[in-house]
Length: 158
Image (cartoon, rainbow, N blue to C red; front, side):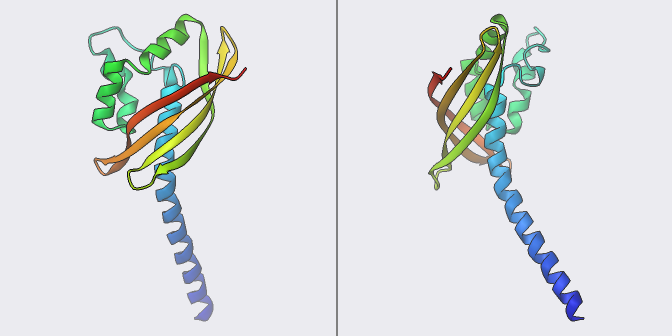
């Protein structure tokens, strides 16, 4: 009986730890997913497979609706971000990918994070750039989502 209790205790401890890690990972993953989606040109062929019909914006921004609030999505559509960057990359024959991204807590209470991402451009002009800014998270529909993006700097490093 003692051995059985010990195994159950270890299993319970593992499950509690795993659930706590999963919750923290979900918050981290939404930020990372957003940065990757935003800064990777033609992410999952969103630009190259897009139709030229009247509802192109709905099709183009569909994946973002999972990671950003409705207000943020509307702002991105109004500013044509990252659509205009995808278009420019396509015109220049470039493919931009996110090589790495790191986050720091800026304001824990308001869920504001600073980020630094290294972007790699291949194709037309191979170069590496570093972009930094802030991301704010907000709960919507029971999920943490990006509610605001601020890009502070974009510098070519190579």
